[in-house]
Length: 131
Ligand SMILES: [Zn+2]
Image: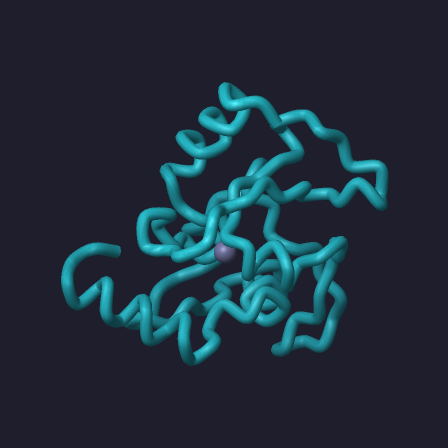
């Protein structure tokens, strides 16, 4: 990843994690490129298969492509920030992220988007109008 590619990923993501929308500026850790379809599954290095993520989401996602929708129990593909819209799959309930679709619910669950520390950070940033 050269610096031009890195800047493309960052600006395309609005300088936020493409999964839970954490602004990069408020993460103590460097963000990373995520292969939406992992290389293990022959996902390419093309920017159309890359997302900009915080290291936590990247670690929770690993090489997975699917997760269980807690509502239906069915196996669902994970949210793909390259071809799907965040607002169509997730909504806010205060500082909580709620999946609106099977994809959204499965992704919230696998990526642990509502871990207590994450909700606390969002609440703090939202309260200060920084989210
Ligand atoms: Zn993240």
